[in-house]
Amino acid sequence: MNGAAARSWERLVLDCRLIRLEARVLLETASGRRREWLIAHGDEAADEASAERFESLARRRLAGEPLAYLVGAREFAGRRFAATPAVLVPRPETETLVAFALANAPANGCVIDLGTGSGAIAITLACERKDLRIVATDRCEDALAVARRNAGALCAGALESGRLSLRRGDWWSCVGEDERFDLVVSNPPYVADDDPCLREGDLRFEPRGALAAGARGLDALSAIVDGAAPHVAPGGWIALEHGHEQGEAVRALLSAGWRGVATLPDEAARPRITCARPFL
Image 1 (cartoon, rainbow, N blue to C red):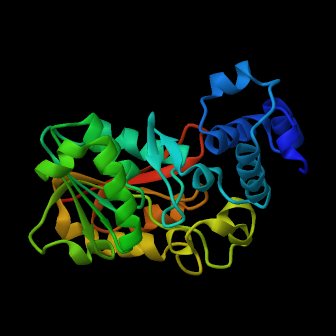
Image 2 (image 1 turned 180 degrees about the vertical axis):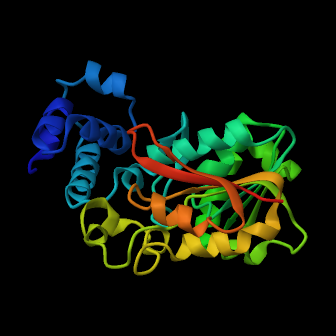
């Protein structure tokens, strides 16, 4: 990728060795121009500064850095969320958890999102269901800063009114003894510590603490379940995202003290979330 300044916008895309869609997204970011303009002016010479920025971004993407970090955002459930290396990149699979929450949170209910990261789950719920009160927690202040930024951009009214609140804490540590929720949701870390995928591709660049959770990937899920019962209101729900091979293990975690335990598939028909209700 040399001599970029002498090439056209379209030639930059063709020469960079990225798939075309990713290349066009990075070119938009590097040039500050809309895709439609870049296509219409594709045969024109790219300016030197934009070309250099594009080639730098393309090299980083070829090295495996997530596209979301390079452009600073990722679409989730139809909204654009800021994303930085402080948070896990929002993934389409998690929309299954959001869909469950939207369908099962009662009118005027209270929801908690444990380990909110970018805030994608909590903020989507706040935008879609203005009757809900939502608490979102994370142990990482840098992650909460990203969630606050996203909340300010996407549902500032909910944040200002207190209908959406952000708290710093590790799982249940920032929740009062008497607090009860109609729905508990979480997309916690669930990859085994020694899983080779953590050393491959995009995952190398994402926060390990948001991915890995013990020898079997179940430490965070266990911590959430262990502390959940006192905080789920009668008739309420807990719904947890997990790996597609962990459904049986998560159902086992919920085998005592919970009823209606079930694992539901994502859009790709892979087991993705397990939900349950308290006996009382």
